Length: 161
Image (cartoon, rainbow, N blue to C red; front, side, top):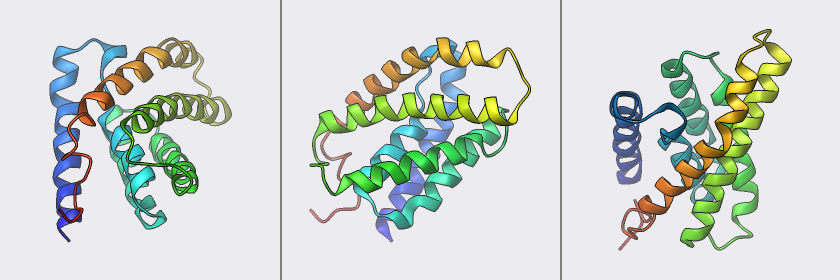
């Protein structure tokens, strides 16, 4: 129960920072996506039962981004399930794995969004915008993940001490 409360507090704080603080002070391709960092953390540390939360986080991101509803929800769910499948084969306490996971998940999220938009949308100008901001977004997310996972007590939320 404490873990769920901590997750709710962290998601709310990340959402407030991502929606209100970052757009006012940071230029567009350099705004970190804190929700995908949380999805990567859950994918490497939690079980498959938390997949519904990953989907809900994607829907929340979609509702604030103004793009198609369900686009990030589906992408976050695919990323979460992919990370959950390989998590038992990896040493998930390593900081470098979290950073690499955030970087690669940001790239996969962008490519999945691009694929879904290509299949289900007729908007033409969005493809170039997604492709040119993909690598800067992944680098910024990896940088923020490296700062977040530097503090070992933040990476062990809900565990017995």
